[in-house]
Length: 322
Image (cartoon, rainbow, N blue to C red; front, side, top):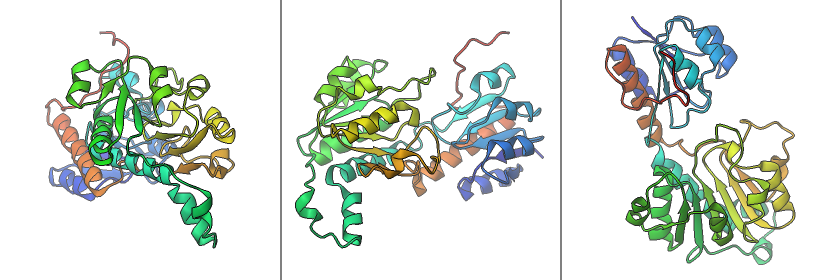
């Protein structure tokens, strides 16, 4: 009976599906790489969420054939090392796109209308908050999307059709006709987008170099009072530079569902910044998305274990020597 090791909880429907197919399920005792390395053992398949799967974990899993990522981002998985060993890495592409897009819109509106600060004020008995802290109406404002993949396209549709926003996007790898199809302005240079946008939302994968997309220089290009939303990768923004911009009053708010370190240290300055709204990486945490992602992983595991080709195999970033 093949063993599938699962590093973090996934939807019960996927677990039941794998068991029905004759796969033995073993969960990590804790959602840590240390526990994974100690316990992966003889597993032929692994399903991992944002924990990823390190090179040391590969060393501890001599029978491993597939690592199925419960999401689209594989930056925490040792993809190249896995490929060198003939281990497939797959991802649950587009399974969570709509949920993350709706989370993006929710955060944008929370920042524009200062929802979290208003809630805190009411609970503290400060009803005068409504006189002292006017929000921003997003209708007619410009939304700048940094990246234009599946999530950003959903965001564009909701913002344009539902909220009456002007939408532009920067994504050098996306063909121009895709922008035309979605009625979104194609901006060729990121600085042009940053100068024009009232709200900037990040939707690009992590840079392999670790360099943030929104560096201090880029943040300084933003409009006074603009709003920044990040539901992509914590490394996409220079968070210290972001804090400086907020402290100087250059930016109106930052809404972050992802951070460079998750969870953050208890003394992280972001936790004390009232102009920052933080959520614990829940963009894809809806019943619908969790079901789709888990079932996608389960089907790809079964494809591999039965000698078929999984649908969404991740290609290594460096050539693999034969």
